Length: 222
Image 1 (tube, helix red, strand yellow):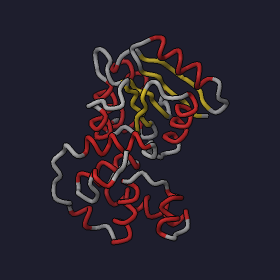
Image 2 (cartoon, rainbow, N blue to C red):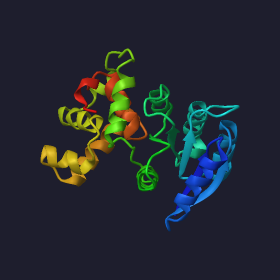
Image 3 (cartoon, one colour):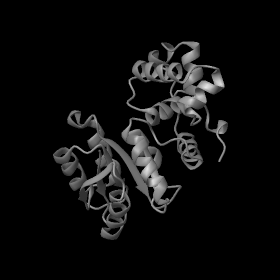
């Protein structure tokens, strides 16, 4: 059972998401929060698998709430998905930097919402949809990239190749097909890369790939 916490200052939005998720046998809404501070407190109390987090909330915004949840050693199993009204929200890149595993626009289709919760709960990041790739490219492109650090230098040539494909939004199966590998081997490469670079999921790996100049925003298509 995937346990979900809803954090949004609009009661109707929370009710809508609860209705959608509660219809699924493998999903359970375990709590709701009306502001960022309450979201952090509820996450620590309930230990959900996934937090659906609005960005613009009173008392504490979703960006800072996400940062606190991700940084809490008691919540290592909790993933955050940011909810935004606009698909070009200036906070999206900051949310990924804060440790969010992905984001959704609030008018997403119910099936996409359900899929997103399941994807993030199993430890992947929501980076495959074209809108996500476009946004990451947009905001990563605004950030000054430092020179690659010693961790990046520790990657093998194959690992750098795999990292480039992850940054383009390819799944493990797609990476395997592109590089003529087995899916298990592709998954192993991704896991080793994340371990070497000390990132918790694919979303953080994508951000690091841009910042280190491994891939540039121009590689992606809308």
